[in-house]
Length: 484
Length: 97
Image 1: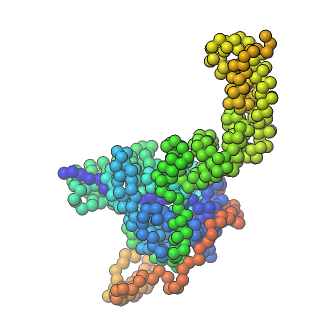
Image 2: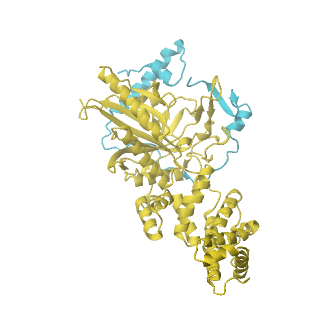
Image 3: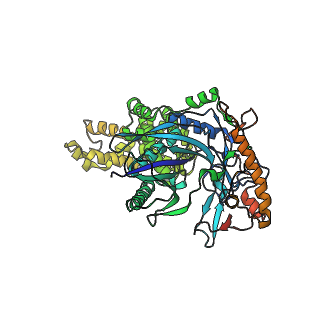
C-alpha cells in the first residue's frame, strides 16, 4: 500500500481595519484587558451590529487576488455554541453565501515548482475574545478586547499531501494578505491562525479517511510539526487495524504532542440560521470596480520594475515591495529625495532595523515618509554627511521633529563653505608634515589618514568627497608645504 | 407524522436545565414545531432563490472609524457588572486544566 496523507487548511486571517467588524471599538492589539470591548463586543442587551464597510472591501480584495468568484450578495448567520470567550453565545459568521467562493492559490515550492491549491470558499466572521489559562491558578481569565475583530477564514480543498506542502501554502497566503495590506501577518500576535484537517488513506485512489482537526496553530513551524505528528499517529492506528476517531486536537509545542480537545461538533450542532439583526451585504458594480482598482499590481511585476527602473538590488526590491504600505512609503520618500536607490537602501537598512528593534510595523512607524524623504534630500544635496544623516535619523526616531531644526540642534550641518574647509585642510597639512612628505614621496595611502584628520577636526560634518578633492588639490600642488 | 428529536441532547447544546415535570410539555410543543417544519420542507422550492431576509433591501454599512468605547467592559466590571474579576479580566472556572 502507498499511504497518502490528505491535508486541508483553514486559515483565520485578522483583517487590519481600524475598528471592529460590527461596531466602532478600536481594532488594535493589546491594551488593558477588556478596555477595548464596547457594548456590542460585550453583547449587552439592546445592542445591534452594524457592518464595517472596509472589512467587506478587504475580504473582496483577497477574493479578487485569488481569482475567486465574488458573491455580490453575502449573508451573515449565527453559529451557536457556548464558550466563555463568546459573549453572545453565538458567533456572527457566514455559511451558504460567504463573501467569496472557489479560487486558487499558486504556491511556490522550495524545489522551484508550483503547487496549485484550490480554495473552497472564504467567509467573513468576528473573532472571539481571548482566554488566558495560565495567569490564575484556579480560574481562566477572559479578555474581550479581541472579540469582534474581523476575520476572514479561507478554507482550502484537501489538496496538500505533506507537512511541507501545507506550510508552503500557509506561507504563500500569508505573503498575499500582507502584500494586499489587509493583514499585518504577525503570527505571534495571533493575526494569522491555522486549523488543519488531516486524514490518511491507504492509497491515493481510496476514499478519504476519517479526518481530525488540529486547532489554533500559530506558527508556520508548528503547522508542519503538528501535521507530521498527527499523520504518523493516524497511520499507526490504521496499520494496526484500528479506526481514527473524528476529534478536535490541540498541538502542544512544549511537549511535542497532539491531544484531544473535545469531541468534534457536527455542523447541525451549531444550529446555524441567518442573523435577523443583519441584512444581506450587496457589493455593486461601482464598489467592486473601486476595490479592484485600489489593488496593487502583482508583486513580481513591482519587484521587477523596482530593479529595472530604480536600480534597486533584488533583496532591497523584495523588502520594499513586501506590502502596499511599504510601497507607498517608498514612493513618497523617493519622490521627495530624488534618489530611489538611496531611498530603498535606507528603508531596507536603517528604517527596517529601527522598526525591528522597537517591535513595530511600518504602519505604526514614528517617522513619517516626509521626514525621511527630507532627510535624504538634504543628504543628496550635500547639506549633511552620511554619518550625520544616521545620527539625525536616530534622533528623529526617538524624538520626532523637523529635519532642519534637528540638524542645527545637533550641529551637524555639513561644512560646505569651502573657505572653512580649506582652513581645516591647511591645518591638518601643517600639523602632519611627516605624512605629507610620505604622500609626496609616492605613498598615497596616507591620504586616507589625512582626510580622516579633517573629518575629525570638523566633527564629521564635512562632506567627505569635498575634503578628498581639496586635500588632493592641495597635496598635488607644486610649491609644496606653505611652511617650508 | 411525529418528528423525532433527542431532547436531552438539544438541552445540552443549549445549556438548558430541564426539570422532569417540564419534559412532557416541552416535548409536545417542540414536537409540533418539528411537524410544522416537516410540512415546510415538503413545499416544492424548485427554481426558488433562497431567502435570507424577508425585506428586499441590503444592509447599511459603517465607515471604518475607530471610537474608544464610552464605557468599556472594564468600566462595567469595575462597577460590579461581573460576578468575579481579577486584574481587569473577568474570570470563569478553568476551561483547560
